[in-house]
Image (cartoon, rainbow, N blue to C red; front, side, top):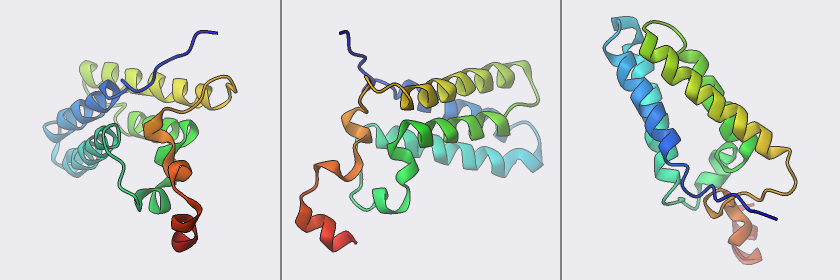
Length: 130
């Protein structure tokens, strides 16, 4: 069976940051929304390369297809207004979120290593966390 490599999904975080940048320059009341979207996009991009050990405890939704897809859908719905370019970017992010949610329900697809969370930790470390 052919496997899908999801380790190269950093491009979707670029779309989130790009959508946030377009928010910064639309209207003043969307400025802070743009900052929020840029921050989430940078966080998602950072998680593609490095996973802080305590992040799984506080933001475990980033480590499942369902959680990450829901975050992408939230970001796309927040930015689905304004100019034509923002509509296109938001629809692409929405499709990526729907794809992530669909991957959650396919048992043949395993999450990539950057979405494993605490599964690689030993039992001693898990006891300290709990």
